[in-house]
Length: 607
Image 1 (tube, one colour):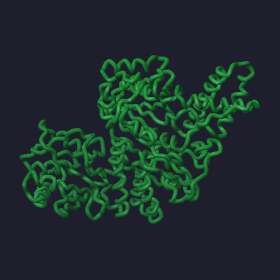
Image 2 (cartoon, helix red, strand yellow; image 1 turned 90 degrees about the vertical axis):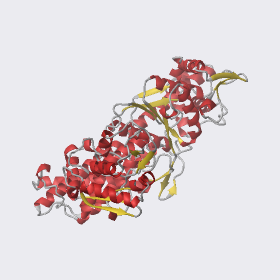
Image 3 (cartoon, one colour; image 1 turned 30 degrees about the horizontal axis):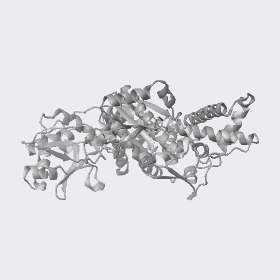
């Protein structure tokens, strides 16, 4: 018996008895293959599901869950999608083709049987009131087009429930830790750090809204070689400022900020005491990294990114967490000695080679405190760990997931999101390097020029593992070329519409509007369908850990609203049409505000 897995997205939290499309599909499939047993398994990991669903499927998952069985035979997948061509309907499924081999029938014959079953079922609401039409296309696709009445009832539910309609509690309180940015406190934040910050903050908002319990953490690399090198660089600059011909480290940090740190240290008076160079270097190193960390915190705060916890690498050593992690792995049989060094047996979990954790000279490798750090995360009881790293760390993922497995958890317990760098342009031409940083453009410089909201939004316009170009001139333009402005202006424009309605004493009550679809033209109905798509998109974004899907959606919605606004008068002499259009505008505003909130971007009332 086949298992029919439906990995579709439920778009609302509550099932309405009148929304029978889902029931009809399931009952029809039961009639068509009565020998089949339906089962849903592991909804979070279903593959090959096209998830551009609309609110027409809002109760699909709930109804299927009530129909689950206990057997797990061979799987048959159902794909449910929104067709690219509007003429193909609102929802399409190739289920007939999936069932063809099982039932030994031509897919088109199976499709005809399903359609006949749907149309003949005894329902609380007639099939004709749900579907404007049901077509069979090609070798066996079944296309469903829903009635305006059905869609408008869904719109009314959106207006009544707001965020409860838009976001589903899929996390059920599961604990998730997201560690991001974690920049070495050795210099200013660059654009790559900023992109990681935007991703981490938006993902945290997204998962919180989806019912997860999220902790945001910044890992401070304050005990490694890079911090020592920062101290050596500032120390050399300090000596030179005293007229001493002191060599600058070959691989030292460059940029004006090194000179600034040297001057700041001098001003705070430490040089007044006579100290040997070793003591002075220690003091300068401690002063410099703490100064840079404070600057990083300030930049992130101004960027609208706040952390719940800050984990120090030094603290891991002081608390003996590093040695405890080594002892734990040794007890599990994954630590061994060879060639005078201590190794972690990462090849036992698919890594390409074993990894040294203690070198021959007794020093720890940079990998060792990372083991202790991730063990500490696990001990805190998180259901999922998410690390956001620069793309240049992709080779580090297998060994870190090997640690997770060695500690007794599946490698999927740790999910690593990689962030590509950002290229900054001005009028299409690359921007020169920063004078302050010496080697890169700082996040602060970009924020100061185009604003934190604009910077965040632009950083979230593409998948994090894709290269991103940001043009300063486009970001400053108040036009449709600037995606941030275009989306925010849509919200502000709707607010101005309601301000005008208030001035003219035009009001409306949702329950007083006749949501039968007659008041909306075709263009408005396309916007309605787009609005009803949001909950599915939101759920997909949460499950995929991809907040850029929200950014993309908001741009599309704004791209539909602005032309509509220029073409149609929202407030007119026709009272009923005015009320309906105000309701539509309110629904657009609700969705825009929710999406922008997830991104951490303001929804301005005026622009």
